[in-house]
Image 1 (cartoon, one colour):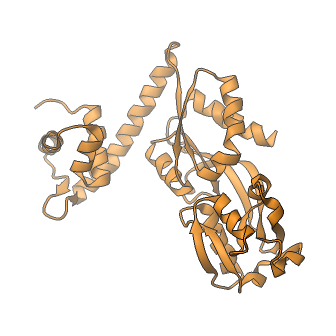
Image 2 (cartoon, one colour):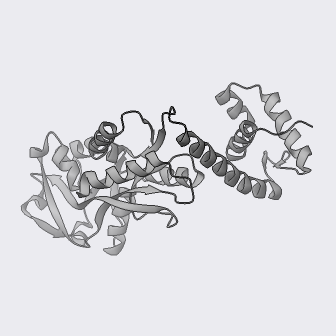
Image 3 (cartoon, helix red, strand yellow):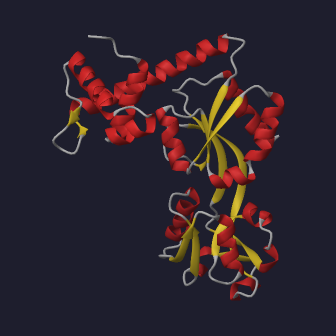
Length: 297
């Protein structure tokens, strides 16, 4: 029986994650029977059944164990590839960077400009997604570094703070609350809120403020677009809790009033995050240092 290749193991990993051979076949432009035969060959070689084919194509107990070891194996292989590549002076390094939309809009341009000026031959590959997905990708070794609101959900990830801001209440300039310069969060319990979508860490911070103030918020709209949220505040559709930096970038900020929150004080800290158990290339380490120096120097 022929040996199993790394590329085949990568395909097997994707099938184990999606539980869908057809999807992976379409993504990789491979015939579905070819993938099915490959899986069968791997099962026969190791005398193990990886999938419950009569129960919706789910992983067996042996499949779950195999998947865990497969992740470790592929991480080790990726580390070896990086190490060998860095020894080759003709190799152009790559960095895979996880980037949430808000951080990408306001903090990333300055960082990437500084990095490209220092290291023009390094290719930067951006993976745009929410903070929680970025953490998962780091744990799986699919990206090298990422940006996220701190603290991370997974404490095993390492982080370095690069930017600090505070949350403010954002209201229309004619709203009754606009006469205040500061307010306790509990005083907002009867207001109508426009929020970020639940896959944003900002949304989790907002819910934490509500919990600490002992009230259930009346949420009338959720959006992933910060400018839409502020536009709706500007027409007095509702109020919003946002990091102060977003207001400073809003073109029609003369239509809104920002109010400081005096209790509870919940900071908005942005960090660059990485997984120490993964191989960190020299390029990735340099990127981390430049990200830190850009905002904290």
